[in-house]
Length: 306
Image (cartoon, rainbow, N blue to C red):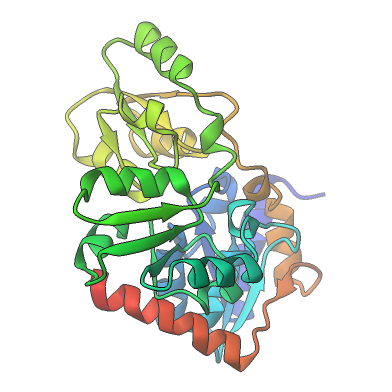
């Protein structure tokens, strides 16, 4: 039997012994965040994987994140911490459906949120993150855009770029879309002095009330720079936990108690331990054509968004 601390200590020993870099998405639980080499958003983690000296990467997140890491680091061994950790949004559109959209709107550029499969990215013109989407959409030369798969993030961008035309699908994050305007009004009443920070994957009825809307890392950065002492957080509730550790002099409240990504919660500290003992996880394997096709989409993101 191991305590949490003992298991963490063993993980720290094993990752050095077996040449592993542990990447943890910010939505992971705090016991995993504490033993990670890097914590951040999906694309930032993939860049860390690319730059890390270790030859083995353990991605504590979901499948599309591990695929992105493999796309950028084809010569490294990339392990997904839990084989069943997927992203419902990434799986909302099929290849055939995207092909049909391209045929229906041949003069449109396809902009793919990074929360998409590597296969879908092969048919897209440019990839974006929630942090870079607005800048990239403004920069690309095309005036007509098919934005996939999150219509909420897409609509949030479209409001700020009225000079461009958008086509959306009915897709999005099922967790963020469960947050309602009623949740906002209740939070405002309970915490009148708190700033409201939300993710743009939320519906428009929520984001329009926000004092700040941005990516997970942008929300955390906003808190770090703000003189305010109270915040209502409108994204996965793990962020409330992390911020409470990082800024014990400030208070954080959940906008919705049901805003929890169950795919992220699949990974436990024991899963990390087992992966390092070659007794769990799944190695990500991509064929050359898929990897190269998806990388073109990501390379364009870097060209336009930096």
